Image 1: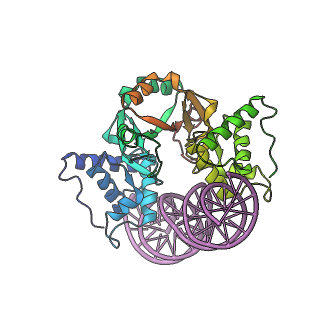
Image 2 (image 1 turned 180 degrees about the vertical axis):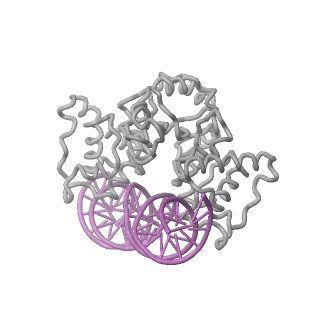
Image 3 (image 1 turned 60 degrees about the vertical axis):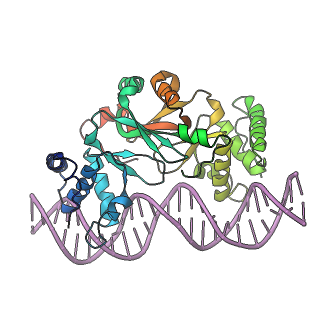
Length: 165
Length: 165
DNA sequence: ATCCGTGCAAACGGTTTGCAAGTCA
DNA sequence: TGACTTGCAAACCGTTTGCACGGAT
């Protein structure tokens, strides 16, 4: 498989991150295959982006890259070993972001009007963390709050349509 | 259509709630049809339950009740007029709860191990409300946090599988 | 008469799965 | 060698949609 050279231009941490990913994967008794490496590289290239399975598949040439089934299976594996966190953006497909990019988790405000996704750092809502801590609840997916963002509320002053969600 | 007599045993508020629902629906220029009434009654019978479309359809006899398409369309209408709030429980289907049952919203802790859904009142996390207020963000969907609940963490002491989600 | 709502069935789209071939330890 | 992975294509499943009928305004 050919790689996409994501990340090489965005910081030298990619190599280290990749070996960390490899360790993570192998410690969980999975194999570090070329397909899995390639998909890790995609995330390492844009660690804060929320990728959908289809978007990942589209980054590779049809003949060269992993097939859809492999992408889905790989995303499940990477989530299982803790390298990915699922993000629900309400657009009908599962999305994931690179988990290690943000040790302190965050949550998302998803606008169902314009689709904008805003990240709110966990530290801004210590109460939520306190509740989760009190409940002994181990978070695996970043919570999303759906609604209308400021901009959309100002524009569509009257009734608001839920079209793009 | 025959009704399901949900709610008659659970409190006399049903009639009032139903007329309120009717008003809500008609004010939004929708018609208060027997199917819509029947589906409202389902929610009024268990105002805190998170119903999926298929569950609602299954409450009626095949020949008597609204068809699947009507259920989906009705849920969209009821959400549009503010009678329902969508709840994401991560089980692959859209769920809704009766909105008026809880004026102060809440959020959900969804266990991907056992499927349990715990409601956390908004008042327990004023920071979240403060952030949303500061951002001028109008919430339309109750946020869900996915993870492993205390009980599941204690049982599956070692590795945890994400099977039931 | 007209518009809205319903029911049926077909279409849709993201995701999963069965199976045979390929790959890594 | 033996278990794990991949790829393909078909299956899945919740949801949406086109269309003709029926009821309400």
